[in-house]
Amino acid sequence: ASTLAAAAQQSGRYFGTAVAANKLSDSTYVGILNREFDMVTAENEMKMDATEPSQGQFSYGNADRIVNQARNQGKRVRGHALAWHSQQPGWMQNMSGTALRNAMLNHVTQVASYYRGKIYAWDVVNEAFADGSSGGRRDSNLQRTGNDWIEAAFRAARAADPGAKLCYNDYNTDNWSHAKTQGVYRMVQDFKSRGVPIDCVGFQAHFNSGNPVPSNYHTTLQNFANLGVDVQITELDIEGSGSTQAQQYQGVVQACLSVTRCTGITVWGIRDTDSWRASGTPLLFDGSGNKKAAYTSVLNVL
Ligand code: XIL
Image (cartoon, rainbow, N blue to C red; front, side, top):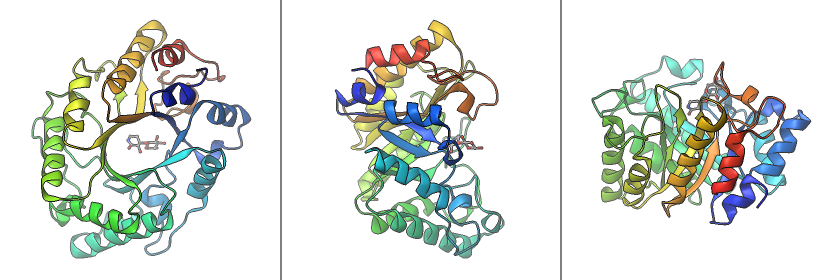
């Protein structure tokens, strides 16, 4: 195969990218997007602050630009994200208690209903676990509404769009021996045992020298898959360059390929200059849109 999407399709998987609405007028960007990828995630446009800037007033213009562009090109869409402690609209940031719980659930219901039938998988809840050694939940206004806020969000999402896969998504959950990974694992195990609707777990996979690709990545992905969920690499980027970076990308792709229920990989941007990382070169295309060594290593191993 000669593109990432076509290569991933050989094993029934997808290869996606984050897309920013304001780059859809950049012909180099759109050319690579249309050629190489078959799954799209809105980089910011479907987040809570973008879709509900005033309480009860929903705004889908930029999200629709991305969803329509993708679907017109035959690509699927990962929805990102329905509930998150970050990138909340101002009105939500200072809410608490029952009012916040209800506002969150209304948001989940409204946004998932609006996009019903158009989303392959939703990141229903993003980044709800704490870093460090506790293995517990992250403190946030949403967490303070009660520990059951995550399952409540998943139930609301299922009711609103029964056809979408519902994912829990987080970072620093790649290394099987980390407490955060174990904490998320126990939550998914608990959800499955109690019938809380969850279909998939997303691994953001933002790697750099301080947070390298773990050698036990396969183990992590397989152990989650063994709970009866799909797993996906949802926001992949790896700091570095040249053959070192290329090898690390290859390792991540191999870890996914070695797990039957790892259904696809998404990179968090197209060119290095599109990356959310302020400096560095963490993606598969350089600033001019040329394929990097990392691109070739990914294509070859898919
Ligand atoms: C990032 C975007 O790439 C940036 O443009 C924005 O300023 C901040 O958010 N984890 C996530 C993504 O789940 O939504 C984040 O995206 C990166 C970290």
